[in-house]
Length: 339
Image (cartoon, rainbow, N blue to C red; front, side):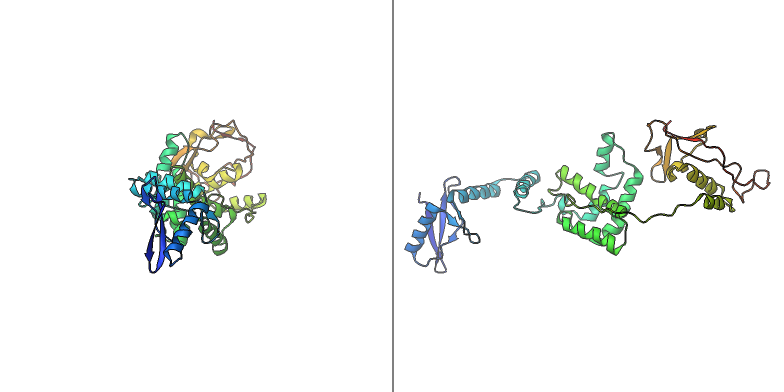
């Protein structure tokens, strides 16, 4: 079999090289010659010394080109699955030949917002099921908060149609700057919003649903958040001395200010948690999760300074209808986590 074959096209001769593996000739390549003998001489020279690449001028051996031709023909002839396509794309990306690719009709073609909304749906998310099946904690409230970020700022910035596979690191960097400069968000809030997508992107890549993680290597925001004002002891006394028409609100605020409990821990306090000299913090509560264990459950007893108010809140009536006593500081007691 001849090593190459020539044919004319619009007065220019093209050359095809024979591939012994596929037993076929390669696609035609222009010699730039209008004379057949000159074209044949050039083709023979290419066989000996390699074909110069158009941009770099570097000569590439014919054997390399025939290897590529064999690979391309194998892909064309094979019945590839989505998994096979992802493996091929992973190799191309690892060699730096492509930036991001996506398998047709795969997760990467799903709209970004739709994917993120499903990812943070506590009842339907495979990510949530995976964590729970491995004994890891993830709360409904956390999923609700992340989903709310997706439905608000993510949807506002990216729209509803952008495919997941088209999201690039630059898109996420622009999104984070938009939150900072356009929304005037604090660093911690920006990082949380980015995490609503970054966690999903990482999970999708690990589970081979996508070939890239656009959030990988994305720079986080740092810096001091705006300083929050803290009431002085005198201001606390004045606040608690004011009329409180809602006794539950008074007790909750008094408990939070005197013990440092989180809102969910305050809402979860039960009668059995109140001891003579301490408060047992066993649970937290939210509308999404209901009653659940605290983040510190199972740890050794932690003690914190707290003050105790005697008597009902100012402005509230006792069961006998008599005016209540003013709240006054009392002895220090302990807060017991996880007992």
